[in-house]
Image (cartoon, rainbow, N blue to C red):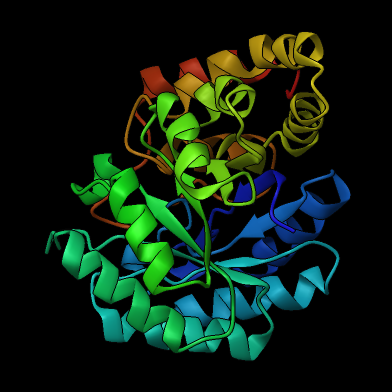
Length: 291
């Protein structure tokens, strides 16, 4: 169910409020352009700075507009287990197809804490759960050994969004958990190598503005056509990198604004991109043929 190009959706703002109309248009456009799944309320959706009410509303809108056309994997992670459970229950109640749950950022649980956390979260929902391993933001890393223990304690854990940039991890996880364990890259620039190692797709930031190209790229890699995939990678590579010159999602929101998808607004403590980075993103979008 979860494979190919899956977009880590931005949350459009208009001033201080969520721009629901822009978000509805974005979701519909993503599906029409070929995205094979959608993730609302992940890191790119600025989940840390949305209220609980806003978080739930964004998930509801995504599920409603998607209307079953592609899977919705709701971001439900928190460094509070009770809060993560509440988000998971809401995601299930409104019709999400799965959930994405980040590790316990800031409070830094050890392996035993991670196992207990995911066991408790999955016991509260019937939805399949993807681990979200992003050490650069969460500080902690889920080792392969801990991932095996989590899966044994919580069988509803069916895969991982891997933002470690360690391509060797794909092979190690396949050996430990089998080919059916869903491995999705969390990093656009290494997605080509990730799939070559055995990954099944990417939860993509760039797909917010280049959904058609990202979908074609993923289709090519999954059918083993790496020559075509490399052509697309070369076209999108400068954009993949430019979007992260300053803290995300400021870059992708600026890029989305260039396409008229939404305003470039982000919430403090994030700020919009600087003029030099805006210029770099402009150049990369032109190179990719997006503007």
